[in-house]
Image (cartoon, rainbow, N blue to C red; front, side, top):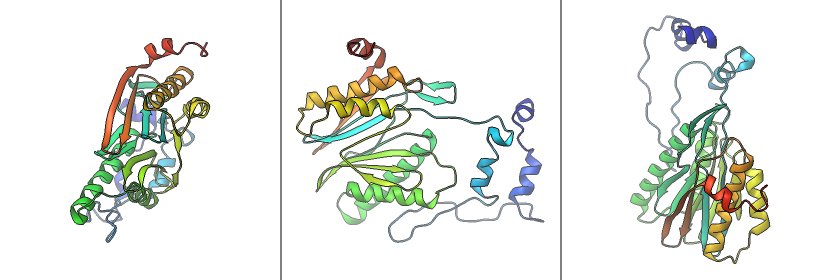
Length: 275
């Protein structure tokens, strides 16, 4: 009761009157599954008020004291030996540090990886759904889905829910018949391909490190060092990033996990030029 009074949230009975049509006392049976196949895409939405309008009523401007900001730093870049993916591990909800040990890399399958930036719940749910679709594609066609097609599937999912409050900024990394692939997909349905990306509120610091040291013909060890340094510098400058550096290397025979290193130790290793 006290939380309801502080947040200014509507009572259950008032919310029920908004959600159910006049005279209806129970929820009707409706589609309750999600299928984003290439042949029959279906989008199941809950009955009730417009989701985007409802979300606008749940922030400080509307008098409700629930306004959670997110922060993270993720980076990925292609080079001649594959794709390097490096992320921090701090999960924050506004000023509250929710966790310092979150793996922000979603292991979609042995040849595909996705990163998390934005809402952890949104990223985890939609990328797990993407993993299901990639598996079904493999069973139906007897060969792996391409990185481009996987990123396009995720982009189509986001387009179906554009403006409804999702918070997703993901990089889809993999290796297929065309070689290493790297795509960026966000909650607006934007889909981009490039040799490097960085997402999250610490991305400007990570970009500064990557831009200064990136070469397409780097050795594997040089690429590992560049990824570690990029995340470490971002966590030093950005209060919403921290924890450990989780790094993956996408190779022709699949991804491997390279390291999980505490950023506080790495900061002392790279302290020259930081302070």
